[in-house]
Image (cartoon, rainbow, N blue to C red; front, side, top):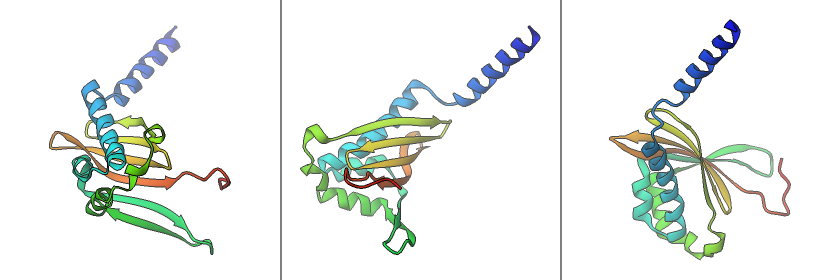
Amino acid sequence: MRRNLLFVFLLMAVTAISTIGQTDADREAIRRTALDYAESYYEGNGDKMETALSPDLAKRIANTNAQGRSSLGHMSAMTLVQIIRTGGGKATPKAEQQKDVTILDVMVNSATVKLEMRDWVDYMHIAKMNGKWVIVNVLWEGKPKKDEKKN
């Protein structure tokens, strides 16, 4: 009996610690930030993208060339906003506009989110800055084409 009570107490403590800062309003704001990022791509809306990003955004992708050498590609907030303004995602048919948001973890001022789009997956760090949730880091990777094998 004592062992069961200890287990229940520890489980409650771990649950309490892992839910710090996880209000429904915060979770919805985090989700909305990720959706604004995705929707701005499909809409070609640079202003909407800009509101979802920290000006200090670092967006990166790990690339491996044909010789097997790896490198990191970097993109700033301004570069991303300018790319969105060119409207590249507007050509994506509505039925193919995937934007699946999974909140992986939330603390008081930070969250980790997975955003699955039609052609790639973004892993995001979203921070609460001056009361607003904004994307500060993105590590992304393109999805393999149907005829490509995963490594």
